[in-house]
Image (cartoon, rainbow, N blue to C red; front, side):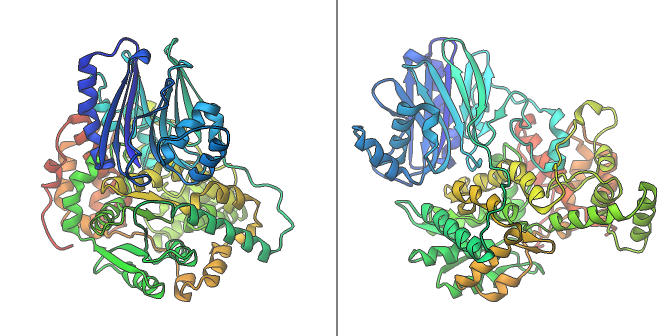
Length: 630
C-alpha cells in the first residue's frame, strides 16, 4: 500500500521538474512513511515517484520497480494471489529479484499487457510505463478499492493516488467545478470520472487509461463490469448458503496475506462480526479488533462490539469520539479529503485507524460492500414499499394530499419529506442511499441563477431490492464508501482490506436465489445463517443495522453552532443558496426537523473550499466553534 505520483512530459525532463516531483510526493507521506523513491525515465520523458507503506516483502519491495528492458511500474495496492501468479511465471522461465507482489504485477503486465489483470485478485491503482512499446497504462481495480486521479496539462499527462499530489505540481491549478454541485449534494461525493476539481479526473472502477507517448493522446476503456443477475440456479437455499459461505471464507483468507499484523474493524454489527468470526474460523490467532464509541449517544455500539470481541477472544481496542475530538480532527480531515466525501463517520474512522497504528496493527479488514450486495439498507426496503403504495394510490394530486395530511399529524418527518415526495408522490426512480433531497429541495439549495449546474442525475433502472443495491454498488461503493475508508485509514498509515468486495464473491452473489440475499423487511438472509454457523452471538444476528451514528444534530445545536454562524456570514462557496440554507439551519436549531445530514454536506464543502480552492486553513472555520464535551 503506497502513494504514487507519475507523469509523462511532452518535452524532455528538466531538473526543475525533478525538484517539483520530489516536493509533490511529500504530500503523500501519510500513505507511505516507510520509504521514498523517484525515477527519471529519460527515453520516455517521464518521472515516477513513490511513497511506501511496507506490507508484503518488507526488505526488497521498494518502488519504482523496473525490468531492465524498458518497463517500469509504480503500484498502490495488493495482489492477494501473487504467489500463485509468480509460480506460473517461474514455470514460463521468468526470474524474480524480489519476493514482492509488485514485481509479479510488473512481469505480468510486461508479458500480457492489460489482459494480464484477468487472473489477478486484489486491489490496485497503478502506472505501468512501457517505454519499449511507447505507452503508459493507468488502471483502477475492478471494485474501486483504490483510487487513481489524472490530469492532462499542456506539459503532459500526470497521475497520482490523491489530487493533492497533482495540485502540488506547479503547472496544475486548483479550480472549483461548480457544475458538480448537484451530484455532490445528492450523492455526498462526486462519482467518477469527475471530481470537484475542474481538470482533475478519477478513473472509474474497472477501467484503464492507455496513453500513447508518441501521439500524446489517451483513451479510457473498461476491462471489467459487475455481472448482471443471471437466471437463478436450481440450488436449494441450503446449497446457496454453502456456496456463499465458501466464497466469503475465500475472500477473508486472501486478505490475511501480509508480512505485518492483520486485525479488523469491529462495530458489533453483522458484517464486521462475520469478518472477525471468519478470521477465527481460518485459524488467525491473536485477532485485534478496533471500534469507535460515542459516549452518551443512544446509538453507541460499544457494548455490541465488546460482546463479539469477548466471544471470539479478540484483543479489543476502543476509540471514544466526542465533539471536541471531532473539532480537533476537522482540519486534518479536510486535508486528507481532497476528493471530498461528506461522510462524517470518516472522522471517528480516522481516530480508530490511529489507534490501530499505535497498537502496531498495520492491516485492518472492513465490512464494506455487504449492505449493497444483500439489501442491508433500510432505504431500499422503504423505497420498495413506497413504490408499491404509490401504485395503489391513484393520481399525483391525491398522493400529494395524502402526504400533506400525514406530515401535519407528524407521520412524515420534515427531513424525510423530500424522499417521500420524490418516491411516493412523483414516483421518481431511486437515487441512492445517500440521496436526501428531491428535485424541488435541490433547486432550493442551489441558487436560482445557476441553472447550468443542475445536470440530470442517474437513477436506478429497477424497483426491486437487487436493482437498488446494484445502483449503489456502481456509485456509492467506489466513490463514496471506499474513498472514505481509503482516506481515513491511509491518513493514519494503515491499510484497509474489504473481504465482501472479493471479485469472486461479487460475481457469485447475482446468481444466488433472491430470497437468500434479502426479502422485503429482512436483509442479509444467507449471511445471518452463516453467522449462526460460525457462532456469532444471536443478539448480533438479530440486531437492526445502526452504523456510525455521530450525534451531529446535537452538536450543531451546541459546540458546532458558532461554525455555522461563520459559514452563513462568509457565504464562500459559489452556487449555494445561503438564504435557504440559513432557514434550514434555523429550523434545525428550533428542532423542527433533523437536517444535520444536508447541513453537514454544506459544512464539509465549506471546509474543503477554504482548504483546496481558497488556500485558507480550515482552522479559521473550526476555531469559530466553542468547546464542550458534546
